[in-house]
Image (cartoon, rainbow, N blue to C red):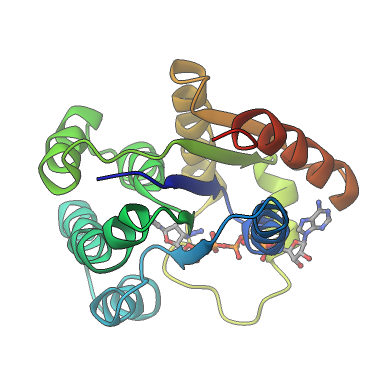
Length: 209
Ligand code: Z5A
């Protein structure tokens, strides 16, 4: 399926994914690549509706299992409609969050065992996995302080520090177990230094692919 390149951006709250997405997109375009930017949950009409439920329907009670399956329902649609066609057309798919976030939030955060997530991952994705994941890592307190400027916290932003510490630990454990794919960027530094680290990884991994 994947003639193209699949790059994901991950990180905890306020790590700077949105801020750095445009930088990565511009770098890729300057390198002559056609880029499909997208996000999860979301990316399709169905996915954006599911995102609305997952993030903003704070009145709805939801079990961790339902939350995880909704993430994968949105993902299944996203793969069929957006990701797979773009990769088949030799584009770079640049996705703001993907399945590492499910392991981090529904696994680490909510306590769903990773082997249970892996079963659904295999079923929904087949052998589709990101070629490169940029994990923007920032200590929880610093990230939350950055993100805290926003007015109305979503369903996840209302969780406590312990939840976000488990999320961060899960992300870092995944990076340690897949160091070739998941590249940790020290996102606690100033933006210029963060983007220098990102550019170095892109130069190493993407330039000749
Ligand atoms: N979720 C899940 O649970 N399971 C899944 O499978 C998936 C997702 C796919 C939505 O994600 C939620 O979905 C997410 C996990 C869950 N919930 N949480 N938390 P999202 O990515 O749409 O939302 P987000 O994580 O809340 O993104 P964010 O808080 O917007 O983070 P960000 O994009 O990484 O941060 P930012 O907006 O780029 O930056 C935040 C502020 O910091 C901003 O003012 C910047 O100017 C500033 N900033 C950024 N970088 C720097 C540096 N280097 N120095 C100083 N200031 C900086």
